[in-house]
Image (tube, rainbow over all chains, first blue to last red; front, side):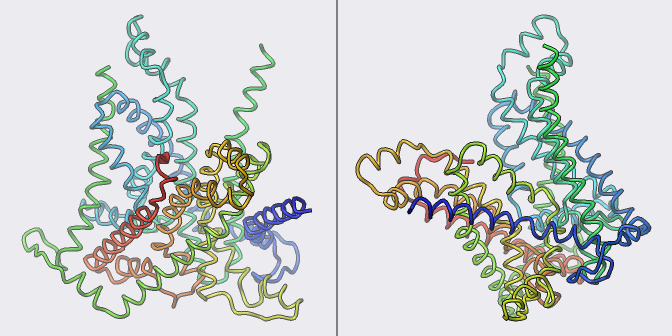
Length: 265
Length: 280
């Protein structure tokens, strides 16, 4: 009897949790298809807000900027982050410790503090706020996450492997590319994934460092949300779909590969 | 292996430039006068004095801390049972539920906060539902309730995940030993599970309290334009009034207050059972 009650309670709790997390997301998706302007009454199915969104050049520009910045920031921060992590794994302990501490700053600091720091930094250097500052800022907060996800993989790597490759006549580049990188690939991939989503979703830091009409999706949602504009729902749905798609692809590629590998062997 | 060691050098230079220098700039601005010029630089505590002596700013600071504490407490009270229930399920079910809870955190926080704007309206779904029950309508949007709800919604996954990790890392043989020695369920929960999961709660507090204190888009979207938290003050100083010195002082004060709060939280956790824990 008591066990049954406990089981019922835990099922109920999990059900409520799922509702709490997903109702707002489904709500946005539902209302993006609403035929009226209302955010509270669903009055019929229509695609008019999607038409409006695709016709709205500021929205489309924001989507383009978001995707371009996310791709560039991911590419650059994954390469630099991986190389740095490898370099650090061969460095002295003191140096490693210092870099790790400094790297933790942007992760542990409130985002708004990082944002205003960068704002003043770029202005001190005389760099105009816009695409470049946005990209630099994104690279700045992405690299620490790449380093964090690559480092554990390096720790479990046999340090003699690279030495063996060098002894057998591999150049350092070959040793790096053919011996070390394949071993730490899962760490690199998850680092890149974190970097992409961090960049794609970022609002606070971007909000402070951008200017000159360069907006990403989050900034646009923030500035547009002051007035009722159902196109935001359409845009949000697009964002939700894109991120879900990226997550699905990243999660399923290894499974597909494994299946393929099994078939051929 | 010297060749590889040098690969970290470019990043170290970059890191000092773009992470350390901005932090130093905040400190520099916070302690100097407006109208900064390298030649006429003048150190002052005036920015801090102005902030801490102004009753309006102090009430904003108090409200921010209050909202953040309430949010953190609610996240613990709601998050703990959820984490506990998930940690006690079968392996497959665990993976499923953790995925379910992690998934929304990958979706843009601003978009998810925006979603609540419609739900909490006076004519929104909740009031519609309450209307069926003959209650309401209750005004929810533009209240502290809405702000706390938005924060809990955004930050509770971090709390659940941290507590869940602590619970699953726990050595189950302690529980077996306790029941062998005649402890009942409640006793073994209070004396074993709970103390061993405290480190998870502590790191959860860090991950919830920190963004809750400094958040500025949640109060803006769900609290309305009149609802001001410390993050909104910083935003205004930097982007509207352009008083970077004063804004830096507020940010610095906020960062220090956060650090002190988290330090106290960690100090309070002096339970011997929690010693020898693994840092995340």
